[in-house]
Length: 189
Ligand SMILES: [Zn+2]
Image (cartoon, rainbow, N blue to C red; front, side, top):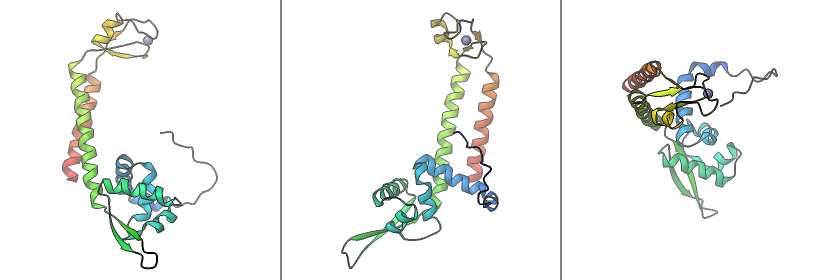
């Protein structure tokens, strides 16, 4: 993700108090982004710390069409991140849905995401341990044994002779990452 450079134009200096509770904010953002999508973040902001917010109020708060807003709400509902009640509008005769955010669910989802991440890292670690890799001295490419044989140990990009790679550093890094994530799982359980 390319970070935009801060423009010299002085914006609201409202960033400072946010930093204090950064950890928590980031977990929420991370989880929402991963399970429901980046575009839902403003809606979550509008819902947070409130109860039974009408879907029409939400739509106007995030400046979206009601159908777009509902689509976002359903995405959150699929992940059990929101609950709703509905009430009949006596004058108009239709139902209006009122939504409440379920912050407890964030922790559970964060845990699931971490577990999946650990699984992926373990798979990667296994592959690093069980495979001989060959790489180009010019850093064009990295191939496993079969692929390297196929290219007769020559880089398909620049023609240099491929060299067997010492991947002990990668293995050590993966192991470190896995241990760290596993510790986090225990602490935050
Ligand atoms: Zn090369």
